[in-house]
Length: 360
Ligand SMILES: Nc1ncnc2c1ncn2[C@@H]1O[C@H](COP(=O)(O)OP(=O)(O)OP(=O)(O)O)[C@@H](O)[C@H]1O
Ligand SMILES: [Mg+2]
Image (cartoon, rainbow, N blue to C red; front, side):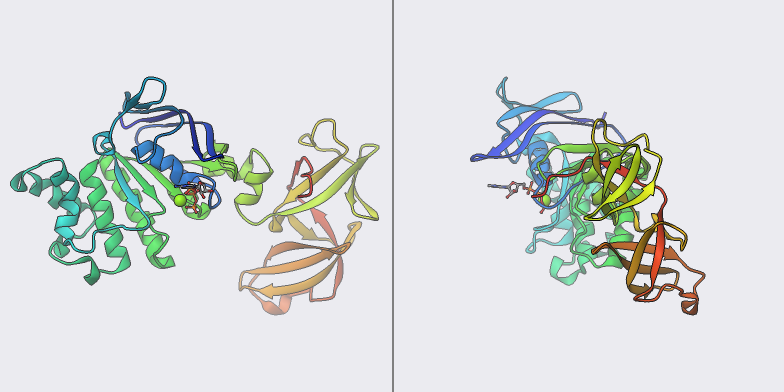
């Protein structure tokens, strides 16, 4: 079944509530990403699933079996929850060989040496570490150590793996490679994986579905990468995935103006997603969706222009406020028309309107 259900989990540290009524279903055979800013409660979710902490309220069900139920006083110990877990820190035991590290969970379950050998060997083979069985962790690269941690998790469970920032300590190239390896492993074994990270790009690359947590520990949105990009549930999601600009907008007589000291008209069509009953809002717009158009009524001054080969990246100034713009180029730096100091008109392509956020 490989299923995890969290129902109405509440976790408090003293008077700090980290999770409140947190519910989540993890479906079998998928990689579910949980992303959110640092401190939002991702590791707390992992600890609640694994049994490393006892939520003040709620239920944890794994494969249909209740592992934790506050009201019914059920609390199954971590070892008996049969989950493979990979953490960012203390990934492998430094004093044990690769083989011993991988065998550790089985040994803890009382399995005899001869009995556990085939499973350990298989786990090492799955992560391409068979040739390193007798190495000490200090003789391995960061990526190899992380593979051993995954092998060890696999001997706990090939059905359910939880990875909490498993590759954050690796360099960019190795991270990329590990993401591919994790995907291949999932496809080979049909494992259900919960992949936790604050790196939304890695999550989008790897995961079938993504849960976006907000700073207050609540879930903002669950969806595929495409759903999250094209239909962000709220302003937080829009700003969390990718680079974003927010421009203040005011509606007067069904016309839209940029809402600075001096109002700047830019549209006489109020879009469908304009916040109901409001006369002010914030326009969320990606750097690629602001285009230069000398005829357009909104004027901007180019603050800086940086050439990155196939894109130009700009900072522009509108009425004393800076925003980011990106244009795809043909690859010739000389084509640059919009140098620093130039004043040009701008138009807005695809954008989204959000309720104006109160100033903090
Ligand atoms: N043992 C603890 N005692 C008190 N507060 C804690 C404890 N563990 C975590 N917290 C607090 O709970 C909140 C959530 O922590 P958590 O580790 O779940 O965040 P996270 O989303 O995993 O962050 P990161 O991305 O930095 O790993 C934080 O504000 C943290 O300070
Ligand atoms: Mg964490």
